[in-house]
Length: 178
Image (cartoon, rainbow, N blue to C red; front, top):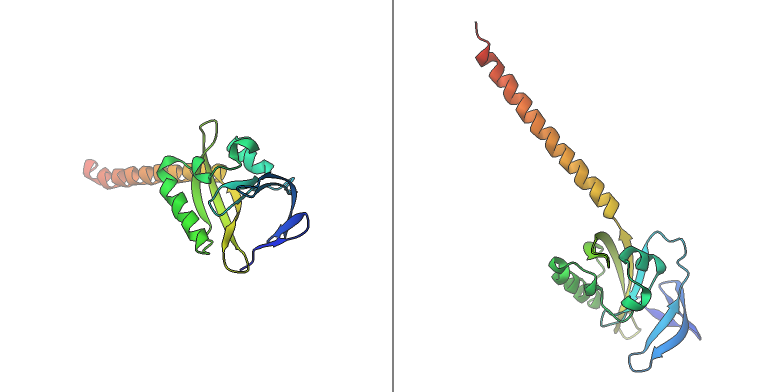
C-alpha cells in the first residue's frame, strides 16, 4: 500500500507532489495544499479519513459549481444526489477497507443541474496500515451520458418503426388477396 510520504514542506501522494501552504487548524490537522492541476481534464479531490475534502482542484470546483471554500471540510455526500447517498457511503467504507473500485456517481451541481461522473479513488494508508484518506480522480461524463441516452432513444424508436413495418408487411397479403 502506497501512502503519503512526508517531506519538509510538501507531501508526495502517489507521486503527485502537494505543497503545504499553511495549516488551517491544529485540532483537525487539515492543510491547504497547492497542486499543479492546470489544464487537467479531470477534477481531483483529496479526502481525510472521515471523507472530508482537504483539497479540491480548480477543475473539480468548475465541474461542481462550488467555490473551494464551500467544499473544503465537507464530505462528497453533500454533492451526491439523494438517491445515491447510500452508494456514496458504501464507496467510502470500501476505501477505508483498501478497495478502490472506480464507479459512476451522480452529483448535483450548485446550480441544481445533474452531473454524471466517473470516480477513480485511490485509498492511502500509512506504514502501519492506518487509513489516511483518498485521492479521487473525477471525470465528468455528463455529455457522454447524454449522447448514450440519445443513441438509446434513437435505437428504441428505430426498433418501434421496424416492428410497425414488419406488422404492415404481414398484414399486406391479408388485405390484398385476389
